Image (cartoon, rainbow, N blue to C red):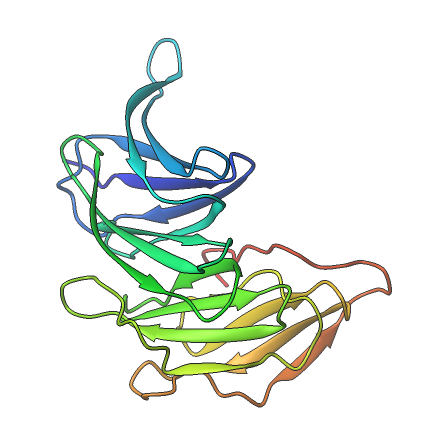
Amino acid sequence: MKNRKIVALKCAIAALGMNCLGSAFAGTFVYVSNQHDGDISAYELVTADAPRLNPISEAKAANLVMPMAASPDGKFLYAAVRAKPFALYSYRINAGTGELQWINTIPMPDSMVSISVDQTGKWLLGAAYGGDTISTHRITASGTPEPDATQFFKSGGSKPHAIKTDLSNSTVYVPHLGTDEVRRYGFNAGSDKPIVEQASSISTEKGFGPRHFAISPDQ
């Protein structure tokens, strides 16, 4: 069976896709966070004949659940709640049906506008737009993030809007809307504090306001 894909749609607008490393998935699944309903809708994406989204089920979260990220192996989905009390919901993805099974909820130190998982699947990274902060949480072997952040620090810029490692897992990129820059941090997944807090900066055109980004497969 060929490899499958997990696709997470954030706020039904921005799309975040993760290639599954295994081959046990029965289809292509799409997840949409519904901030006002406080839940996550699961769908199966059908591409043959008449392309469509077939509804599967809803998984409960909380009001203002917004950014989501999937683990690199496609087994887990994480969703951050931006309303107080700030929280992170973790779900196990059923490989056969695409249904989400809630496994735990942990507190988050700020209102995360963006979350991602590093290439090893061992770290959950977060960026908070209002607080200008970055955080890291260790992910256990069972797929659940630990409740205490190993790092929580000021990003060095204004209004960070996204966070993600490159494919080599050696660099973290964070676009900053407020200071028109993309800040670049060193990353070491083997460290208790994986993000090097001193960053270099790539300036954009004034008023450009970088928010989202994607890394090409060939880097």
